[in-house]
Length: 187
Image (cartoon, rainbow, N blue to C red; front, side):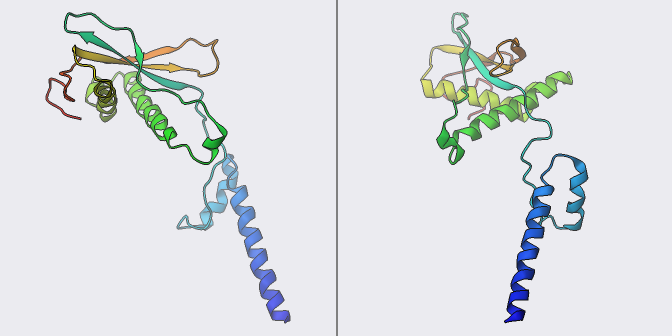
């Protein structure tokens, strides 16, 4: 009976030690990362950081406008929406994936613009945003246009004292209303 108690206490102590090391290793300060050096495969000590090392302090908004066949430009319209959070989103929020994807792609585009890269329109992120807007136009059944542009706007979200930054305006994208640009690429 004493052996069983000793074995149970050993397992409990090992579990408490593992849980303590796991919790300590979640701290953002790098001094606590030394525990991970003992986990060569990265399987025993999970990395669930409670706080991002550099949390995002802004959001991106994707807008678009169409150009009619007569050359008239429409008003800028939202291509993506930030969904207001609800308590149910703690457990289930598949719409967040689209928001996160748009955020990541816009971050890539803004980084290329900041680096003054002439290849912004050749970047995969540019093509994804272009196709995202094109699909939106297809879903809305827009037909009588010759093309569109999209705009990446960086804004602070809830802090209305900060002015939005217009980070990137795409060149005119020809559009035939059939799910393809005039360059021939299909969605």
